[in-house]
Image (cartoon, rainbow, N blue to C red; front, side):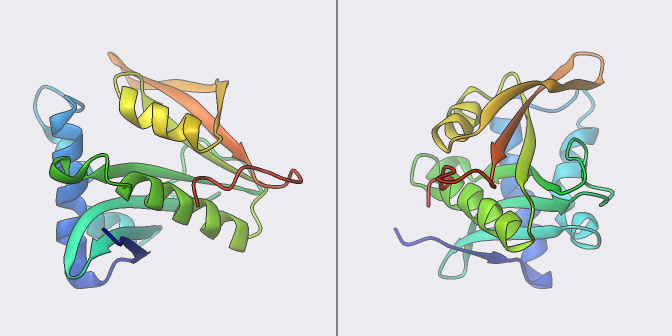
Length: 172
């Protein structure tokens, strides 16, 4: 399967949000009333202040991620000179086919193009497969980036050093 990652078009934003919502729901990530799943499903809201990327095969949106530069209202853990990504999700039916890796690599490429020296992220402690993906891509655990946005939701931090000679290519 040849996956293309690119900025989402306005018409693709609902499908981009749905891919993330479905991924989070499949992993049991969200809150008891479902309100957080509504937030992750609203890719259009993120597209106003961040870059929403989609992974597509043909016209099918298989996954999405939100990339934010430092200073964006969607950036939560990155510092000056850094970027981050959040709300990465792959449609459950195509997990394991390289879609997530392609999205991570696109975020690393965008961060490098933006001149960022580091790419950061937060992952839910329950997202075991996602955390494995990030570690395979060369991201290192950063306990100083761990945080809890609400009681019962624990996020662990990771970052990828983009400035070091020979820095990992993030699964290019």
